[in-house]
Length: 349
Image (tube, rainbow, N blue to C red; front, side, top):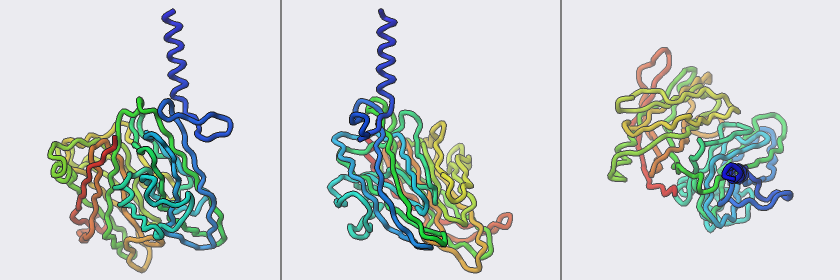
């Protein structure tokens, strides 16, 4: 009798954890409070002429969710020409307009405002046609009830022929009982890029997160890093992330040499506890074969950014606004600068 009851319970639990697609004509609506669900949205197609670039196109999707969603993974797929995109969730009464594509400037959309009003959901690697951001079991992002997803999309057709491309997003959720670890976003950026012509160069900084954390929270820092995604363009050759300060100072956490079109996100098998560290050090390396200096920007210019998610009551934005070149090491010109850190209380649930 007890064996039969236990078997029935395990079968029920297995059914509960099977993801169901929301809105499929062949299945009943999925209840995200009771089982794992997959929410899907197709943003339609965009036509790009040869060499055309579109920056600042917003794509919105109103979720109509009456309860909080606990997001364990996000998948993005496209048919090419999507150079990069950053995705956020906001209350559905802001940036209010019909779902679909619209110029971000029409509603004065700001990534920082979106992150503060709601939160960060996902970022796409440069020119990746398919990418999945998946956390370890139990780790989630909380998307509050009645939210809208907005992506700030940068398109670039680098080919000599016209391109018609589609864009699709899938959001995987788990029921509240499986949401054990709530994650908050972080960003590292080196804005003062000045890639010398015909030269290899590296730009990096150490960011003291502990000071900003403890000034804000008035308690010892509690932070575990779960996910990291670097972003650079075609001249980028390597991204490195290390621990800064404390007994493990300099320990390499993550290194990526992903090429354009390759997903570059990394989920740590064991979340990295930063409780005894001062923060993080990051660097981007480049090889500029051109006859001109390359700086921060879109198109043929460069970027050095990392999006991360951490188990922490704060979110933070760390950046270098002004740096200086140093002594070349093995033919690579080193650049560094002071890192500013802005911390925000992040109510991740």
